[in-house]
Amino acid sequence: MKAGKKILVTGADGFIGSHLVEELVKKGYQVKAFVYYNSFNTWGWLDTLPQDIMQNVEIFQGDIRDSNGVWESMKDVDVVFHLAALIAIPFSYHSPDAYVDTNIKGTLNVLQAARKLGTERVLITSTSEVYGTAQYVPIDEKHPFQGQSPYSATKIGADRLAESFYRSFQLPVTIVRPFNTYGPRQSARAVIPTIITQLLAGKTEIKLGALTPTRDFNYVKDTAQGFISIYESGKTIGEEINIATQKEISIGQLAEELIRQINPNARIVCDEERLRPEKSEVNRLLGQNEKILRLTDWKPQYSLEEGLKHTIAFLKDNLEKYKIDIYNI
Image (cartoon, rainbow, N blue to C red):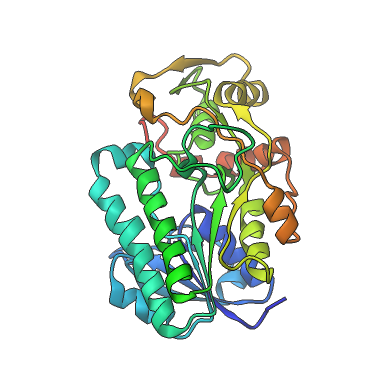
């Protein structure tokens, strides 16, 4: 246990970042939250966290694309968990420049500052999308990379930059690679909130893209604990590590299960707008978790059924925050 260390979480205002902030505070760490500067002074999902958590969080407003701001945020911290990124795949089709600036340049800013400041540990967030459609399963960390969208290409670039700083400058980097994370606070551009919010709003025709692709789903609290376990292990520097359940389910099966739980009268309709270009669709993701189980004390605590139950309950209470009638990219 390394409580007392000061940890910066970039992307702390986002889905996984806000859960990570919460779990780090509960474990006794000093937490600094890097949130995206905006004139509304909103701190994203951190605004919804309980007061007893937030009174232990220092807020830094900035932009991950700005090297000086990143440097300023990192001057007094021991460890950085770098989660800030643009993540929506459809948005990356028409705005790839923004993904290069945020995902690659933003990661470079963190790595450069860490190198100059002598930061103790740097955890860079990757994604299972870097693997593309599985060439073999389960997908281990040696699986080839394939940039099937501008998003995944920029994440591959950021990962390889991180690796180069470890190899070139001995920067204590770890690449953390979660498979598909879901749970409370996830935006409607992800498939699980898309299905649940349509069902809760009483829709009988649930609009989805491709139904055959499979995914390996992590409940968000398991993902957050994965990050912390990887940091707390002394064996993970210089490694890239999957966070995965090693179980897969197709989007169609997932939708049928949610329909069964919420509104058995609903049916799925294919919405052409939601289909990825054929060669861009990642058809199968099933991650191997042998490495994280071997190098850390992490084990997933939530079954898919249990995680979905918590997610449905959250969305039921927060439905007004979601724009159900549009395709969220």
